[in-house]
Image (cartoon, rainbow, N blue to C red; front, side):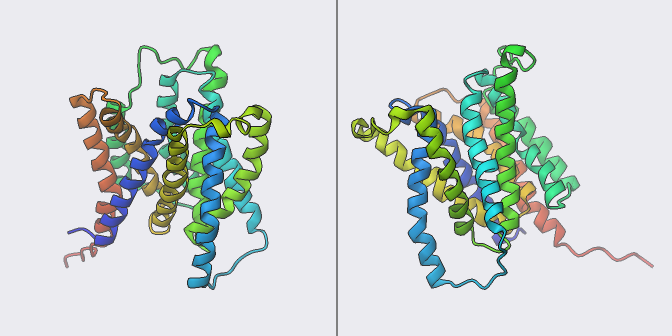
Length: 315
C-alpha cells in the first residue's frame, strides 16, 4: 500500500529524533564539569574533525559534477551562524532567564516556524493532509511534552528576555532546516554539514574563550563519564543524526521532515523512563501514538495519496 522508500524515510526520521531526544540526558551529564557553551562547542568541534576525512573520502570515491557557485560560502556561513550558532547558544542563554515550561512550549513552534520559512524560501504549500497531521501532532505533543501549565508564564516582563531568546533559537533551527535544502541541490548532506560546521566552530570557539575561559584548562580533569557524554554528543547528535536528517531532506519537503520533531518530547520521556527511571503515564503514551500517526500521515500516506491516478470524469 505504501512506498518502501517513504517508509524508510519515516523510520530514519524517527531514528534522528530518538538521537536528538537523548541530547537532554547527555548534556546534563556533560554539564556536571563544564559550562553550557563549552558543552556545545567541544562536541561540535569533535564532530567537525570526524567529518573532514569522511567528506574527503566521499569526494574521492564519488566525484560529483554539480554546478557550484562562488557565493556558496556565504550561504554556508548563513546556515552555520544564523542557523546552528543561534539555535545552540540562544536556547542556552534563554533558559537562564526563563522557565523550563516556557521553553518546552516555545520549542513546539519549531515545525510551525519551519513550515512558514519553507513557504517563503522554498515555495512549499500546506495540503489538507499536512494540516491534519499538524493538528494531530500538536494534540499529541501537548499530552506528552511535560509542560507545567500552572508554572507557565509567557507574558511576565521578567521572563520576556528569556522567552525571546528561546524563540530566536527556534527560528535558528528552522532556518537551518529550510535553507540547507537549497544547498542540498548542489552539495551532498555530508558536505553541507561540514562546510556549515566550519563557520559554527569559527564563531563558537572565541565565544567559549570569552564566556567560559576556564573550560580549556579543565580538560585534563574531565572524567571518563564526561568524555563519554562528549563523544556521544559529537557522534550521534552533531554528526550521524544530522547526516541522516539532511539525507532525508533531499527526498522530502522541509515541512514534512520538520513535523517529525514533535517526536522529540515523547522520545525524551521514554529515555528518561529507561535511564532515569521516571514515570511514563498512559496519557504520555497516547500522546506519543498521536504524534507517531501524524508523522506517518505526512511522510508516507501523503506520498501514496499523491501517486494515486486522478479519476476521470464520467461521461
